[in-house]
Amino acid sequence: MRIGVFCSGGDAPGMNACVRAVVRSALGVGHEVVGILRGYHGLLAEEFFINARGEPLMSLRSVSNLSKLGGTILHSSRSDEFRTESGRKRSAAILKKHKIDALIPIGGDGTFNGAVALARHWDGQIIGCPGTIDNDLMGTDYTIGFATAVETAVEAVDKLRDTADSHERMFLVEVMGRHSGYIALFTALAAGAEVVCIPETQTDIREIIDHLKELKKRGKSSIMIVVAEGDELGGADILNRDLLEAGCPFPTRVVTLGHLQRGGSPAPADRILASRLGDFAVRSLLAGHTGMMAGQLHGKLTLTPFPEIYSTHKPLPEGYLKLLETMAS
Image (tube, rainbow, N blue to C red; front, side, top):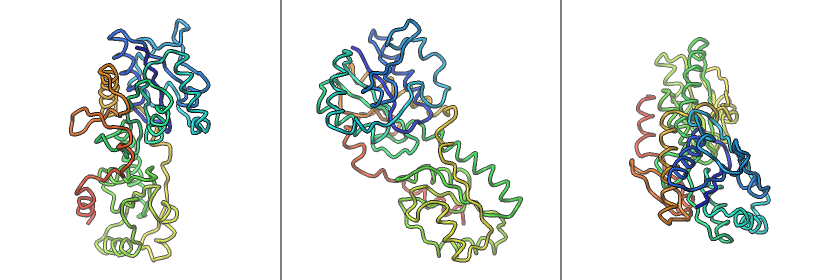
């Protein structure tokens, strides 16, 4: 079997570890791996990873010492052409031309939507691996890259707390999460933030102001608010404006972490998860499965059909918001 592997959408720490697992697992049982560069865009351009012998195949040496590296050696991008029917038909023809029997796309919901669309024109097998820092996919407790993104955000909030204490200020720290509050909530809990604002809950300015005034009355001199970029009020800058207009009792500063959260060496948890899922994806293909995402639920490896991955909003863990409220009060 010849297996194609690629990364698509936003990069996530641990993607390289997943590629490594796919290559080593497949080659270990006598199959070939083609590294497709730049996701669906690279597939349409017929851009492939070239090994040391000049072949468009990945070797064991291609992935040596790869687990510790952030980003993805296969690069990632988005493709407008692939969103068209003609683009998907041409992608299917290219896969047939290069005798690729199966695909392992590593990415998020957009990547897997694309896989479903591609499967309408191509009869090869597809098993995906969840590579996104947002942790917004059903079918897995955690996605590859989430643990590292939270670790990066917590480290930033910890450092900002030092400055907040020194100057007796409130910092509003915006993290990624356009539709999901996972990064914001886990960061707020781990870093001991006083407030979190996320897409899943209504942000009440008056309630926050009352909470801040109570904290100030009790002698609190520094405050950390973690804001998901997808908060319904529009992010940290707008929230800051609204709080100041409502009588915020602390001087404020806004920090947007942005793409910083996607970079860096992956945390051990992401390296292990990526290795498990990459290996499981290969074994699932060899067992004849297709049209599913490899995930890990309650410690067990599972396969979930692609449409179920993104058809429902992934709920936050039960009790975590209440826990933050208890810790912050």
